[in-house]
Length: 331
Image 1 (cartoon, rainbow, N blue to C red):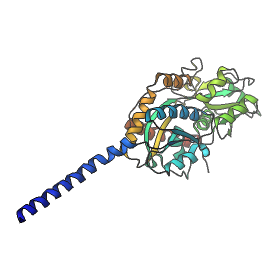
Image 2 (image 1 turned 135 degrees about the horizontal axis):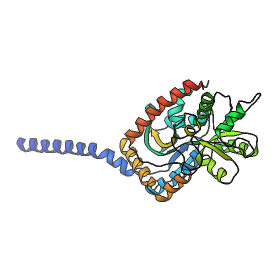
Image 3 (image 1 turned 90 degrees about the vertical axis):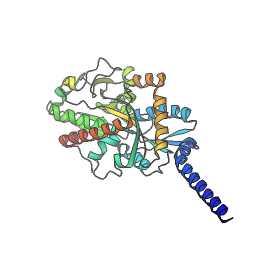
Image 4 (image 1 turned 60 degrees about the vertical axis):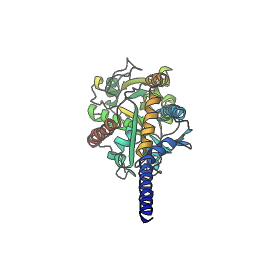
């Protein structure tokens, strides 16, 4: 009888241990399988109407279809994208709050904001890069300069007061303008805006003379003849503006591209990050979405999360050098 009880207890103990082991092994997979079971909030840290907002809404629609869940875009603008980014950094790491980040929020901000409320590589996990490309230097059609050479000549005239707009202090547009100042030995006065849309409105209305804008927002106005493109800031000419030279071709050594990417708060479970990665990569394979990205002057080239994290580190170092040489700084 005692031997039978011992065998029974040993059997129950073995079954309990096996059940616990199975539970531990299946737990993460079950969490991933059940995700998402409620709406996902995608924070776009800029006002509606800009390039980041457009890309965010296009991606959100595809993610909703793939994940079979509602993906809601929420614009949380301010401080050149850092307010919305900080909000996501503090969110619960459960996959239900995501960020449509850009190079400005994750590669430029650490060098230009002395009290940045988040650390990009510590407080976020990169799900993937969506698209990349240069920005564009644009002018009101009535402005006499038709290229950078003519702009520099006008800026060097005695008593010249040429202003340029960007979508915020410390943005890629701001630093591109300061790079132009340093390289050409001129002083274009910076006028920061709280987004691309209000800046372009002032440019078209004649309140502003020239501006650095993202291609996504500027292209419709360029094609309509409401503003004129002088140069693009990326490493190569934009396929959407093949006749517009790069900064480098115009004698300004500025070749940095900007990018859009999807991020989640740090400590988001790996199975959920993997699921989001799969959803994003699947969404980006849509030929219609790729065509829309290309029509905005951006490029899609898939890279791994590890490769993208490496790019963020490298871009951060490059932008830091540019910030230092240009003297751009924020309080």
